[in-house]
Image (cartoon, rainbow, N blue to C red):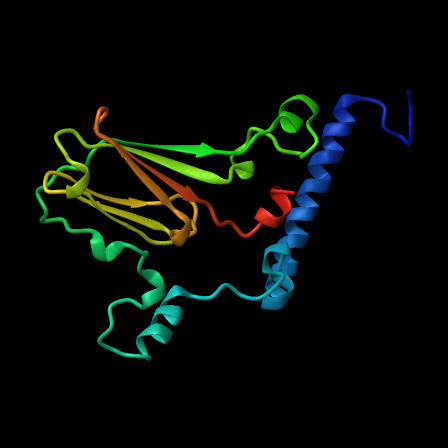
Amino acid sequence: MDCLGVSSAKSLRALSALLSSQQDEEEEDECKDVKAYARLGPGHIGPLPKNEKQVSTANTKKNSKDIWCEEEVAEGSQYDDLTDPRPQPEYEIILKQSVGTEDLFLGLSRKDPSSMCCEAMLVKIKLPDTKAKEVVLDVKEKFLDLRTPKYKLGLHLPDPVHKNESKAQFFSEREELEVTLLMKRPMDFINMQ
């Protein structure tokens, strides 16, 4: 096993120690003479990251008295009233999809049980001791606002909805309001074919 003059583990260790000490000395010598641009690595490829201080000063130049811009405020935040003592009712969000026999038995429409293939969202809200005429409901694209004399619900919706194509039905025997919201997502033309 005498290959290129290396015959034992002892000579391999000696060779390794000799090479590593020479490399360390060479790296130290090189680092003294190397300019800053030569020390760049793969992480320095591409544009430099922007400092958040620069971005925030750009926003404050518009109007120095503004604390934030309109894009930063979530839709429906005007309904968040922290001083309102009314409790939030129990609610449940259920995703719905229209499924026919061609989907169930033959699988022709490429629908699957995932949430991306759902067309509507059903929001069930329990309103004990409430009558239908006391309910005030306002549906926005990403926010549902419900007010009664006893309850208040400001619900940020997980997906945007068609606010004009919503349906609401109050079941007085169950004391429950069901709001069906047709979802509006950017990739629906692909998922719903």
